[in-house]
Length: 115
Image 1 (cartoon, one colour):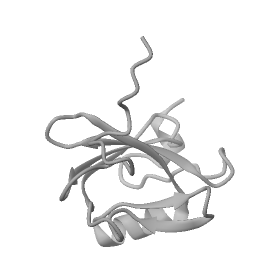
Image 2: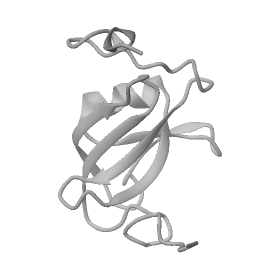
Image 3: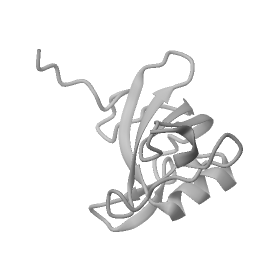
Image 4: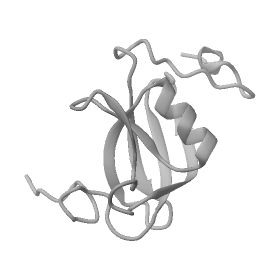
C-alpha cells in the first residue's frame, strides 16, 4: 500500500470506516516508550485531541467521548501522533500527568504476565 492512501505527505486522512468508525490507538510514554494503554478514538475524539493537545477517547462501554484525566487528574498531554501504513491505527506518545494511565491505579494497563 503506498503512502498516497493516507493522503500523501502533507495531509493525513485516517480511515475511520474500516472498524465501524473507530481507530485503535496505542499510547506510549514519550520519554520511556513504555506502552501505557490501548484505547479507541472516533472522529470527534480525534479532533478534540488535536484541538486541545490532550487525549480524548471514545468509550465503547459508555458510548461517549471521555477526556483522559477529567475525573482522575491523570491527564495525557500529546507529544506525538503517528499512523500506520494503512491509516487505521494510531501510535501516540504522551506525557502522563499526575499518576497513572490505567483505571486500576497501575502505571500501565499492561501488567498481567501471561508468558
